[in-house]
Amino acid sequence: MVFHMTATRNNLGADVFRLKNEKEAFDIDLTDGDGTDGLKRMFSALLEAMIADGTPSSVAYEETPGYDQKMYKEICKEYVEILNSELVQAYESLKEEGLVD
Image (cartoon, rainbow, N blue to C red; front, side, top):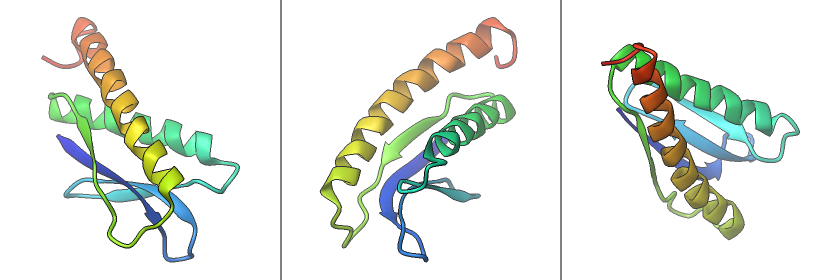
């Protein structure tokens, strides 16, 4: 399953990383002190999707037209690369544990 991640602003004007697929989307507020917990919840959701789907998940960076916070865009791009690497490792571990085929 492919998810898309972008750096953008939510409806309250906060800078967020938005992770979405065809079914759902959720935001991680980058200016909130709870951002680390949001990243953990996001990774858990990706793992749950892999287990439910039985296939590896991946994340693709998606540009948000008009979003001008270059620093957050660059961080998002780098995080997507790191996240994909971690998802490959997690999928291999899930296969070893017999949780996916």
